[in-house]
Every structure is written in structure tokens, then in C-alpha cells.
Image 1: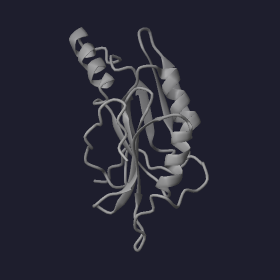
Image 2: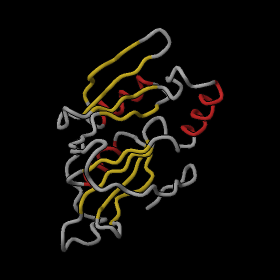
Image 3: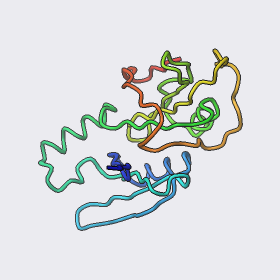
Length: 178
């Protein structure tokens, strides 16, 4: 059996605001923008991964969700506990510089992790955690002050491949891990 991930769903508060972030900051392209009787959702994807899409929708878009379920999802999303994506990049420091310059909320500046990756973390406009990981090259240690390249959008792997990170404890509001 040969399986491949084709899509994953991320809850967002405001589709247009999310689209602005994923398209304009991270370089996603719009694949679908669908409006139904009671809900709207859109799918976006990276040009480098035409067979994988990220579906953006409101947390209560599932018609089977009860009002209590919708309220619980809204609260989890407000606390940044509902969504988490991990992207692979060939230059964590350049990705950090680009995303920080766009005004995204920094959760963690680039650091070398014990498992052999260099990573950083941000929140999207809805509070979802986004991690950007780069496999560490042999012999490169402590690049905290160097290696910052141009401000191009990250080359990323969406929803598949790359090292999956264990969820990092969320800093308190206004706290920045350095």
C-alpha cells in the first residue's frame, strides 16, 4: 500500500486574513475558494507541492459540530492549541528574518535543537503554531548571529516529510523564547 498525504485542515478565525498571511508571507497559492450556504473554506498550497493542499476554514465549519463543540474549538484556537504545522526549509535563519519582517508573532527565534535540526516558531494570525525546521549540517554549530540570508519566502514541506517536532510548550502571551 502506497499512501501520500493530499490535504490537511487548519482552523482560522478570518479566512481573508489567513489568506493574506499564507499567500503573501509564506508564498502559498489559492487552489479553491468555496462558499456554501452557511460556510466558506479555501484550499491553498505551495507551488513546490502541487499535490498537497492546506484547507483553511472556520473552527465551526463542520455542520455536525454542536454549539458547545464550536465554542470549545474557538477557545482552543484562541489559546493557540488547535493547530500546528511544521515546515521544512533549507535556511531557517532566512525564513525567520522574512516572516518576522512581515510582522508575524515570534514564538521562538532560530536555535539548534538536540535532535539535529535548527528551528524557529511563529503564530499565524489565528494563533496556530508554525515551526520552520532545517536539518543541521555537520560541523555547523551556534549560527545564532550568522547565516541570515535574503528575505525570500521559505522553501517548505507542507504536512508531510521533514522532521516532526514534539509540541513545544507555549510561551505566555508576550513572551518570546530566545
